[in-house]
Image (cartoon, rainbow, N blue to C red; front, side, top):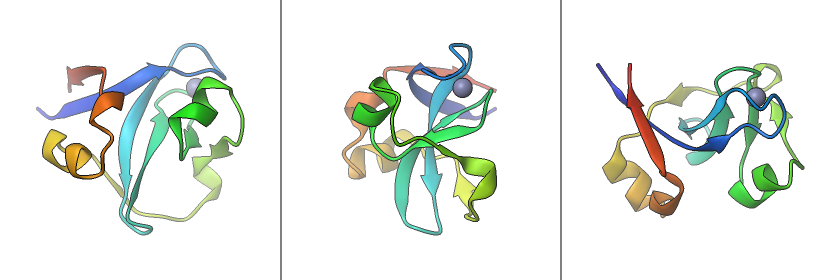
Length: 85
Ligand SMILES: [Zn+2]
């Protein structure tokens, strides 16, 4: 079981959760929709449904960050919800 942290529902599909994901390749966090695979580098953009990108079209390695890592990257306030899977 792994803990996943997420921010809000996806503004594009309104179904998926925006999961905080570690983009290892570029050493940054982004929000990844589990349903439609859209991504946002910045929560404000996700809120306004702008500057989203289709993650499938971009080459990078990802990992599921733990809470400590999210805190380090100063995204703790975005980890509003979590689930185990
Ligand atoms: Zn979505």
